[in-house]
Image (tube, rainbow, N blue to C red; front, side):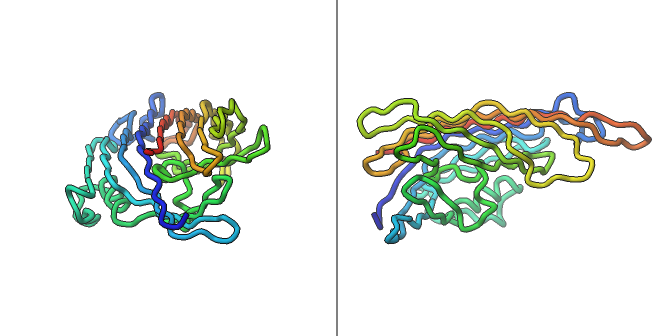
Length: 256
């Protein structure tokens, strides 16, 4: 309903390990270029509901703690709406990652979600999984035993976006609460470059709980592991290995 606030607690971890990659493709020889932990509470404020049941929602940061390391630079930003008041100034942060966290606080993310939990952000680039933390999202199709959904995740270092397919199925029903499990597989690259021989292997998946009586996502857990490998020319001739493992873990829980 218009005016409702759905609050989610989020704990997430993103890491990239490029051990085995040729030194030419590493910055300062660093093989673990990205570690990022983010947790906090987010309000999903219902701005309006259309006749078809589609809702306009705005994700607002209530509490945020972002920290980690990019290359050899540590970063960290913590903010609480009640204690700190005004949003931090993105231009006053020390690095890009803190600036990104400040932007999340200062600019609430607007999106639409329908009765099946399918959501679309107004800014399409924000549809990637790592940017949707704290949003009410995950598809459910009442009356169906199995369905597919597609998500995008930005793979750092390679700057290559890939699509993942989740095969959703009903694990069990307990009254009106439905539990979904969704193993993941690699679908395709959204940008294929000439001579791109990178191979991806994806494992893990998602688990979600929905309350069918009110259409609310109660819990979402993502546990994804994306391995990639390939070769590229190096200066002076020959080729060098490109290897990496991206790990993304997220747990999102409705605060009732």
